Length: 238
Image (spheres, one colour):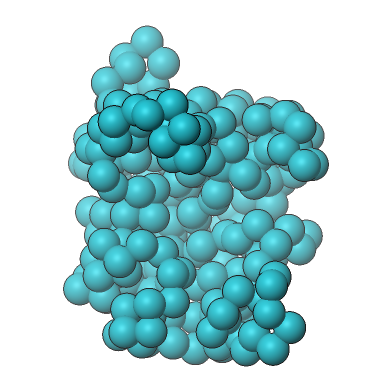
């Protein structure tokens, strides 16, 4: 039994896009993110699973404007997350890290299907696993995927890497100067105060399975490594 700590890193799709979203997937940005993940991996005491959103490629808003029904729109979002997963896999492999993308939608030519025991076996061998395709079901977000996969593989913490927000606030800090940041919260408070850290399905899954969440700003160089090594930054939810 490995003594390493198993974690899930949750990245937004926007983390891989160019400045002002001028490129859906910006190779430079992807490489930067990969280097940040490698710095955490190089600590040597972690087994890392990664989930990337798809918002840089496909958003629900676009679907709504097209008058598209929810299920089809969600499947398109899942395919977007697989594109992001493959881009990140490639960047991590360029840095010499063995990586597997496993998808909940079957695309055997492109990636391995998600099989829980296979994922755990990969993690045990120090292979980074990127989970693409969401849960494989419409109506569930990539936040929920993070909580579900964390529970399945026995990860006790999700590092929620935010794009430019350094934790959880009582209101949106981008539009309210008097917003107050929380250093610590309970799962109950997150649900009760409706703090929108993640959607309620994901938050409830974390609460029920005793999975901690750390919300932090990934745009600060070295932050993924800092959080992974236990430094107190961002907001800790447990």
